[in-house]
Each structure stands twice: as C-alpha cells, then as structure tokens.
Length: 157
Image (tube, rainbow, N blue to C red; front, side):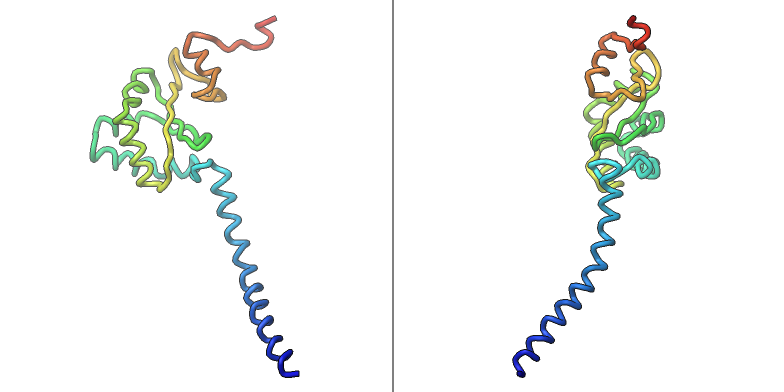
C-alpha cells in the first residue's frame, strides 16, 4: 500500500509542472504571428520607418553622400523579405545601386534592426517608374524597363 502512495505524489508534481507550462505557450504564438506576418525577415515597414533616421545617421558616419541619398529615397514596403526603396529618378537609383552603397546600407540596417534585410530599388517617378503593384524584380518590371507599357484590357480590344 505504501508503494502506490509513493507513486501518486510523483505524477502529481509533473502534472502541476505541465499546468505551469501551459500558460507559457500562449505567450510565444503572438510573437511568431507578428513576425511572420510582416515578412520572412521578421521586420515590417513601420519598424524600418522608425529606424530610418538611425540607419541614415550610421551611414553618414562612413559616407555623407550616401546618407544624403538615403534621405532622398523613401522606404516603400517590405516584400518577400526585402526592403523596397523608392527613388525620384534613375540617376539617384543608379548612384545608390553601387555595390559599396548597397553593402553599407545593408550593414547599417542589420546593425540597427538586427535582421538581414536585402535591398531592392525602384524609381517612383520618371520614365522608368514602376507602378506600385508591379514587383521590381518580376517579368512585368523587366518588360516595362525594356520599353513596354501596361495597357488596360479595354485598350487591347
């Protein structure tokens, strides 16, 4: 009879531990949901916008011209784990797309936000501007940059 009594308290302790562990799982799910929703990188546009001045300041310490370029562009969205930056002209976009500028900005973003966030650029105005709904690395963007145009379905008839 004493053996069943000794066994009973042992399962009681683990079950109370299991009850204590149950409140912990509800806390972690909200974090992954908010991280998974914005982008695979775990950061959203709002977080980038809040940190943008700090990123620019960090870049300014190493390259003042690049900092000025960052001040002239606009973070547009975080899509497919990459930050899309909009520039007002082809010239500004070309200046930014130099490997050293991309690397310095990428490293500053990584330092400030703590995530590896690749960069993509688009021209918001001018002859090579992409509409907001067009992915900058997609086939439609390539066609537009090669001189194509988007027609309304009524224009085709």
